[in-house]
Amino acid sequence: MMGQPSQTISVNAPSETSVAGSFLACLQRAAHETSPYDHWLLDGTLPDGCCDDILALPFPPPVDTVFDGRRESNNSLRVYFTPENQQKYAVCRRVVAGFEDPGVRKTIEEVTGTDLSDGLLRIEFCQDTAGFWLEPHTDISVKKFTMLVYLADDPGLANAGTDILEGPPDHKYVGSAPYGMNKGVIFIPGENTWHGVGHHPVSGTRKSIIINYVTPDWRGTAELA
Image 1 (cartoon, rainbow, N blue to C red):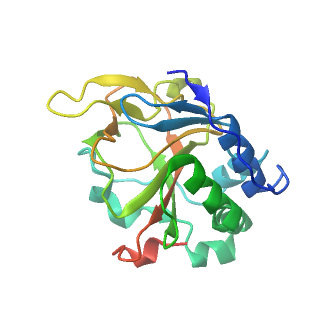
Image 2 (image 1 turned 120 degrees about the vertical axis):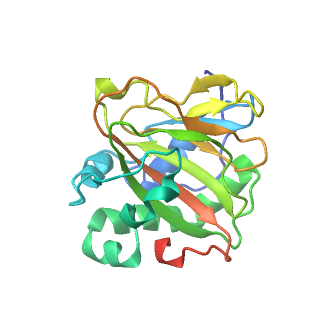
């Protein structure tokens, strides 16, 4: 799944050592795919060391998880970059500050066409253990932006990237976002943005963060940054 680099970004970007600067530089060189829907493949999303700092957070992988193809089946076990966790952990504060940067929001709007004027930030830290899968789905309409950033370089997770799919009835597999440390994928949720995580042979824990901007009527207010 190779595409063309994104359009030139005309923003006075912060230093690339910051989360905002690193992301803006990454978005400028991202591969923009248009089939079966617009999505952007990322490499070097966060500044050096940031993925390691997230992995060092003292949250163990969840146990007693239910693998039925839906994340919400394990809502009580999920971890977010909430104000409380930002107060405790510098990397949570740093990542949230980066994606609250007005220049980041503006550039995402310019590149993707979404409207983040009233978007609220939500960042989830995921540690998906053996047996995890996600059924084909489109993100709910109250999500205005979805980005996944993968956090590990474990060779056993080479097939663990998010699957890009065509729509029903067959949900034909198109390809997967490459999984690896600091790689990722962006899409703007819509009626055709089918994706999931299939039953691919993987070993190890699939670690990532999911970054969303959501509408003000998002029900899970305790999840917000």
